[in-house]
Amino acid sequence: MPIRPNAGEKPAHYTQRQIANLLALETGISFAASERLLSNLTAQIRVYLKRGQIVGLPKFGRLQATHRNSHPGRNPNTGAAIFISARYNVRFRAYKALRDRL
Image (cartoon, rainbow, N blue to C red):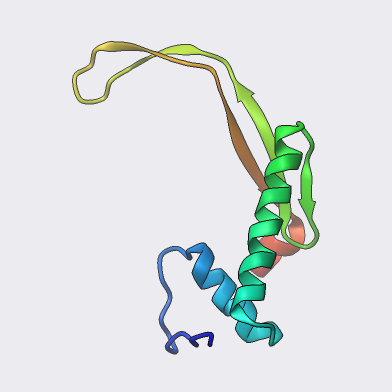
């Protein structure tokens, strides 16, 4: 059974289970079904990002995998020079509809 959060309680971030819980409360589907739905959604987003495609979520924003080249850097604790390897990052750009609501 989904648990409704206390009024005024706003965590700094939401876990996948908390989002699934809220989804179950708002839609009336079971918690297990909402967990599967959220898990499948994130898995599909991951597949498209790995293919190099842009994932657009209507009225929310878009996600895009971007490549960062390797480059020299510094260890902030010791100041020693280090090498930062190449990697992919995910960038999020909010759509105007979302920006206007914030």
